[in-house]
Length: 273
Image 1 (cartoon, one colour):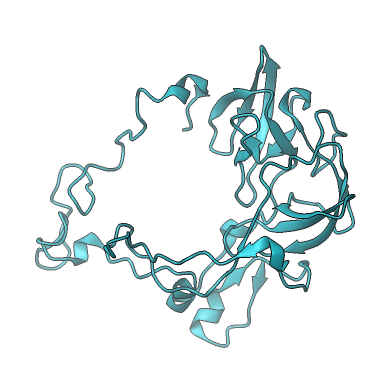
Image 2: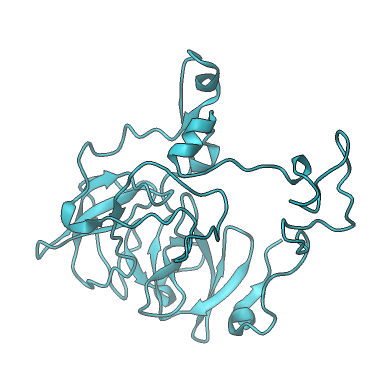
């Protein structure tokens, strides 16, 4: 983590991951595009997600979550920052000259060679079929449905641990503690996702939140009764409702939100704590 000398009150607290190991290059133009900023508004201009607006202008990097150029090795050209995700990304150059961005696993260095194959060498960054990954290995960017592309374990520092391969399914232990069963015909990349220190970031000042597109969040107890179930009263008041509620009076905290009839519930062997 990078820290600063306390030249101002906010600098005293500010920390962020050390970016000195990243490549000093601009993102590849052919693999970037501008996404329209909606600031939490819908097509009618009404706020549907609170506390979003502003933020620094940024380019979206097209990430290859499928990595479906099989049996063709690729060399890592650059290690880059991505403003749309917590993890770092790497630019791969394949033997045929094509370049693609993929999630950077921890420990992968510039110049390294990686490959996607049904049964590839067990080396960090290689992508192979789940049934060919031995028990105990850490994987990321895991496919839930074969061929659809990685959907699990994609954020900074996250990984899933292979617990078992049996009967067409692989059991994975996720970072949350949940044990989930997925089809072993899907692909996963070896290693854990880079930038594992991301969770230690201290924003330091309100202005840095605004750069990230985050608007201020007002506490319910500071509002009037007309604005929130917790509002009103002289001075600091208790909540006044038996169960915690949202701004709209919906019960939250301890209430299960998962659909009981969801088809994939049968794939969850053990729920997260």
